[in-house]
Image (cartoon, rainbow, N blue to C red; front, top):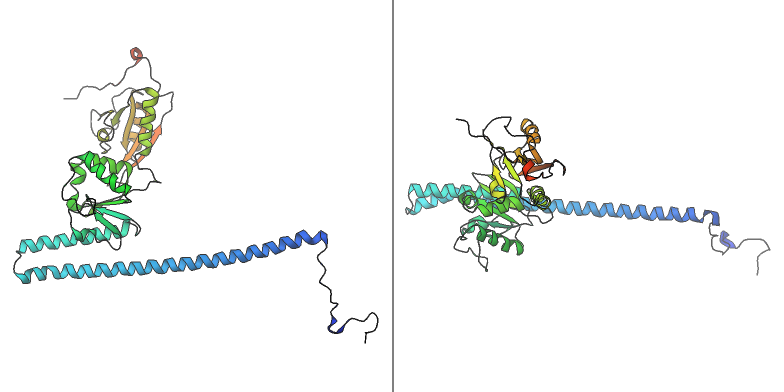
Length: 348
């Protein structure tokens, strides 16, 4: 039986789909829907970031606890070692003292690595084959130098060039940090080419003469000498000669870094003005932060003033700022019109 005309079916529904928004409101409605979706996505991404941060924090806390545990175990071993050596009766008091001193060095090297080297690093140690020095709080560590099997090579490089080649071969294999314990600090003096190479292309991240020096290599981050090297290269290309450099007590050993350049010290040490003509020297290098010498250097230099902080002063590695003085100031005059480098005689 049908209902009366004009009367809605039971339940109050007409049976028809809701009418779509009027055309003039369609764009607004769609934009509102999109904003809602974007807000829900942003909220989900925030929750995801918070969850990842919580996991990272928990992982870091667990790793720190593991490092603390490992350090505590080593400290206990170091404390009991002299007792064990004394109990055997085979070691002299001098031997025991040397072993205690050595174990203390190992502990300090480990703490330095823990504080300055990320866990993802692959760390070389100039270790003389000592296995204790390559146990570094979960970091992948290996001997330097090493043979093809990764064991201590058993012999030292013949010269500085061979030492650099040994480092670069291991860099190609993925090693990116190198540690020189205090007992191996002689490497950086004996192998001058290696010292120059590491300071030029790597970054010193820690330096303690009583413990160790640590270098890190990052292909995406040029070494501290990058700008200076580039300036000297450009100078040679532009002027068709190598620049002369006045090293005004920077402590950087510029002659070792630039063997093809004429590098010389000032006539007198400890003075704040120099007896050179204006713009008579290509490059003048001064200690970092010395405003008086920097001003005097700008008078003397024709190409650049370089400020240098040597390792141990403002940080573990070099800090260098190169201030170019402009192409016109570096213009080379004809030989007959050029004073060149004027060096007064030494005072009596």
